[in-house]
Image 1 (tube, each protein chain N blue to C red):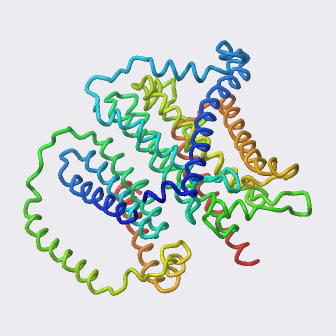
Image 2: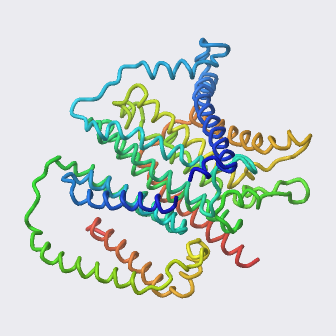
Image 3: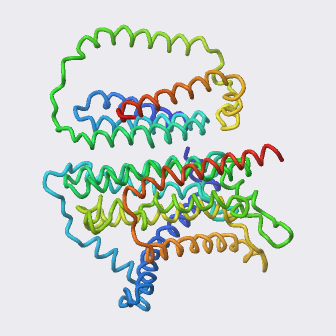
Length: 337
Length: 162
């Protein structure tokens, strides 16, 4: 055991873990800033621009504020579950980064079930919301938690089914092999990305991805006008920040999966000397994810929230049949060719 | 290393299983159930059955127990509900049934020779899919039919004025 912990393999793995964890945490902190600035830009106001140049130190100031805030616990709350809930939502959100390939070599683990692993882990994230809502012993959080769990269960179906077409084409469950299967071009200029042969799957994935992360226009779980802040109404300070970070981590996970499944992962044009070639795949990957996050934020800033019955009807009566039809069409094409 | 991890997760699974029964509040029981299911998944991973491990978490911990918790929250049970004595006679049936189950499990485990010799490929998605659609196609389809019947039954119960 001691030999293993001092071996070269382990040191490389540890270095990768530190790079990915540090990178992801920094990225999450700055995603919050970019979202606030972007929404401010759309709504024609300046946004947070006072702390540091262009407001670049705002995430640090936010973190400090969260740490120094008074920790409140509502009366008659179930204290054990109240403290457990933010942890339960944070751990799965961060665990899924362990199998995402950020580059040809920049990944912590690659199993032959990486994709299912991410689905399994993210499906555990709902407990954080449910426990947070229930243990607060307050009516708005409870309503928010109920809505969130029903919504996440419903949209998980379409989310999972929408990528089955990709799996049938790539013939594997390993994220790395899915990325590798999208190398090269058609007719010399169209990249072999799955978005061109699975457009239906891509649309269903994007829509259910937004619902799965509880973002506008599907953020019925925390709709401010009716439920104050939904399941995290009673949370403050660092515990609230953990819920917040988990939401952003889930957003990044959904965007990374979309990139891997439909946009060719870290594939992209390669040029320059060897040290540039080593970093380029990760740059392409991050750029693609940023594109997705940008679309997410624009959607949040521009589209109003839909009603709860519309949300449920949309999930079960529109998205799910489309996802199933996509599977049937894809399997017919795969079987006949 | 694997041995130590296996022992650890086996102990966690056992503890969680006992806790499921010992807890008075239903919500705590279902939370222990999640711990139990995830540690069993960890055991599956250590036995190189990653696919089973992941499916176990997706189906049970990620969907079925969520529904349990959902229902418990909807009913909003009081924290210290009195236990009903209605099911006391079940204890008498339970003891012989449990002993019988233990006997069967023990017999199976002892009779299987070379369980350690199973090829590493046995736990992959390909192997499980292939055996489900060839050797076990009839049980598989029958199970699907059973689930479909149960689903329709649930709909009929829920909507009396169909």
